[in-house]
View 1 (cartoon, rainbow, N blue to C red):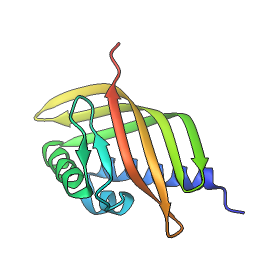
View 2: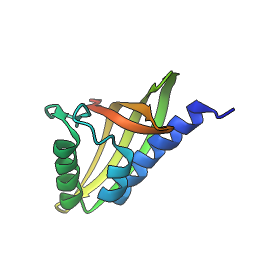
View 3: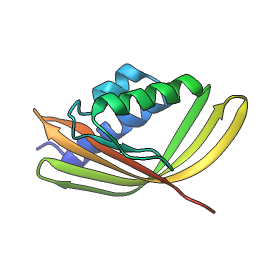
View 4: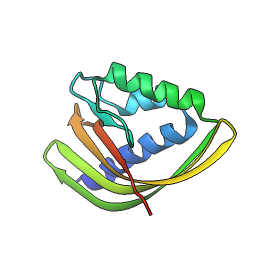
Length: 129
């Protein structure tokens, strides 16, 4: 039997690999193309639908010279065709010659469609120390 938890974690890892590599095609492969997809970047408004979400990733990738994201998984839950991963994102970003280190608490929600897990929601909130 397939371990669904591990399959969800693989989809989650694919999201962060696409993020780090600033690979829009890989990001597109991870996300559901549906109009109900939601993305909330830290400190930003909610974006609904893949077109709006894609545009923000394109801008982030365009204006970021380098990015590393190390994650600390807090919880993984799978229930039927929905799953979520709660984690801390440890981010190192170089943008416009500035080095930025930050932490975000994030929730990634996945939906299983045609035997594959797709991201349908990403919400990152900054952690202030």
